[in-house]
Image (cartoon, rainbow, N blue to C red):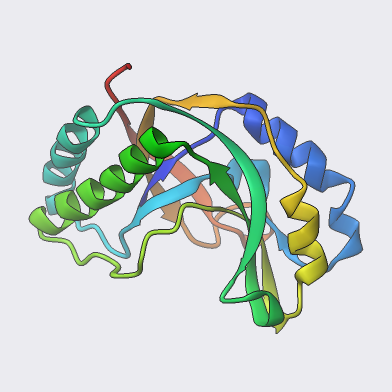
Length: 187
């Protein structure tokens, strides 16, 4: 499972259109629009007996956050452009948005930990994965291309808890199932 900020349809469609004309230029495993999300907290395993507690704690954590404006923009690669395994686009965030999203990430991790779950300890870096590479590759030109991308502005109004069913989607990709939505306070 994962807790995610999911862009609205307009933002997803814009990014998909930007990528669509470019996808054939590289043999990456391109993310599909249904997979577009910004992971706020990754949860490798959530036993059924812990789910209700997790949901309630995530609801309280999200209710302490306020909505914010953002846009998908720019690009990067993990772990680095010279040996990338992941190609991503980022989020344009002002100080308020950066603070709220960072606090939501910490709140989601705390909620999961208090619900008795093991939480990934990696540093939170907001991004939306657009492609995965089978072998590490140099992707400077792709990062430069993504650096020129800026999607429409949208208001982040909450996060979602999503179950990921590995290998059950088209072409053996994950199939995502919405478990619950957690709204932020309006500004």
